[in-house]
Image (tube, rainbow, N blue to C red; front, side, top):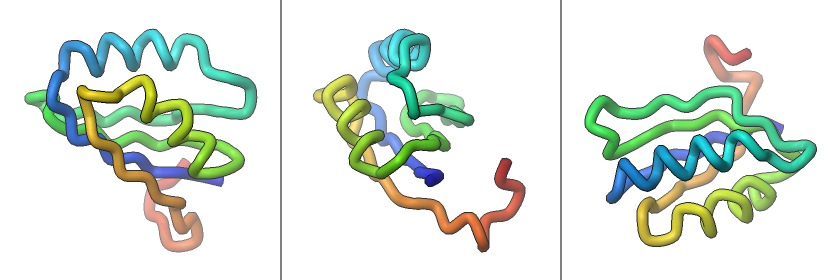
Length: 84
């Protein structure tokens, strides 16, 4: 399934340094297809592929505790435009 994550970031330097590390060592079955950061680093939208929203949440929330608030949603691929 495809999952969208909207990040509201309070510490961009820590967030993006951690993201580079996290994305370089993903568990099997998880894929991050896009990272779309705001110019000022205060927000980012990411496109993931995983078996469930909880699988992505369980990976990201601990890694971003105290530096970002994250909102997760399953993507309706039938109505998506320009998706993969």
